[in-house]
Length: 453
Image 1 (cartoon, one colour):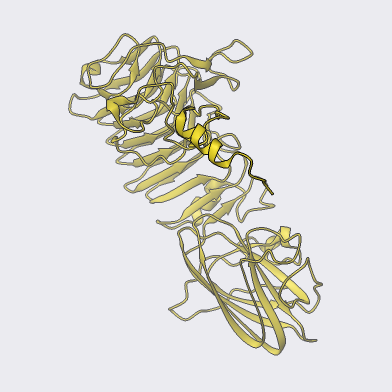
Image 2 (cartoon, rainbow, N blue to C red; image 1 turned 180 degrees about the vertical axis):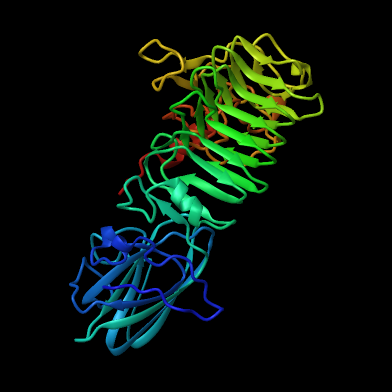
C-alpha cells in the first residue's frame, strides 16, 4: 500500500498523511501509520490479507486515526475496477466480529461512526480485484499529533518536533517513554501523556506564550537545576494529573512574569519550594499534594498577585512561606501548623509510606496516597472548581468512604490531595452503600435458594 498526499476541496480538512516518510505505508495492522482527515490513494496490489474480518476482505491496508475531539468519522472509498470493504477497529483484530463498523461494496461506499477524543481507531481498507487501486477520503475531527521516543510508533520522535509542526488548537499525544525538555512559545495547545505520569516522562518544560497550554498525564523531572515547569511572559498553563519533581534548589513549579498556572490533581515533590510565585506570577492549586524539605508554597510577589489552594495537602517544614505569605488564600486544605480559611486542618495527613521502602524522601518509591484513617479523606470541598474525574492513579475521583464523616454533611465529599482513597470492598454490602445492614439482609433472604447460572 502506498499513501500519497492529495489536494483537497475546501470542505475536507487536510492534516497529516504519512508525516514521517518511513511510516507512510503498512500492510500490517500493528505498524499502521497515523493519519488525519484528507484523501489517501491506496495501492494494495502487493499486499496480503492481514487478520480475520466479518466483512469481505482480500488484500488489505491499514491506517490509524486519533481524533483530538469527539465527533463523527466519515469514510468514503472508491475502487475503480473491483469490490472491496472498509472496517474500523479499536485495536488490531484477533478474530471476526470485532469491528466497530464494517461495510462490503462493489465500486464505492460510505461508512460513518461516532468517535471519541484520543481513542485510537484502526482503519482497514480492502480490495478484491486484480488492480486494487483505492481512493479513501476521511472527514472528521482533526487528528492529534503522535510522538514516540524513537519515532517507530509515532509521527515525531521528539515533543519539540511536534510543537514545530503544531498549530494553535492542536493536541500532542505522547506515547510512553522519556523525552527531552521542551519549550512552548506563542501557541495554544494540549500535551497529553498517553499512559499517564507513570509511563510518560519529560525532562521538564518552559512555557512562554500568550496562549493557553494544557498538560495532562506527565511526569516532569529536569536533569539540571531548573524548575520542572517554568511558566512566564503571560503564559496560561493548566496541568491535570501530573507529577512535578524538583532538582536541587529549584522547585517543581514556578510562575513568573505575569504567568498564570493552575494545577489540578498534581503531585509536587522536592526542591526548595513546591510552587513558587514571583514577578506577578499567579498560582491556583486544586486537589494537589506537595511534599519537600523547604516551603510548600512560596509567595514572593506583590500582595495582589493571586495564590490560592483548595483541597490540597502540604507536607513541608514551611507549608506557606515568602514575604507575601499572609496573602495566600487556602480553604479545605491540610496545612501543618494551621492556616486561616474555611475547612483547613493541621492534622497528620497519614500518607501510606512517604519515604518509601528505601527510606529516602522525595524519591520514586514514595507513596503519598492516604491511609484509611487519614483525616484528609472526605474532607474536601465538593464545590471547588475542578476538572477532575480521576485521581493521579486513574481511580474515580469522588468516592465516599464509609469510615469518615463527609465535609458539610454532604452525601459524598472529595478527599484532599492528589489521591482519592478507595475503600476496600465489603463482601456483605449488597446495596453498595458501604455498610452491612438490614437492607442487605433483605436482599439475601429474597434471593435465598435461587439457582444461579
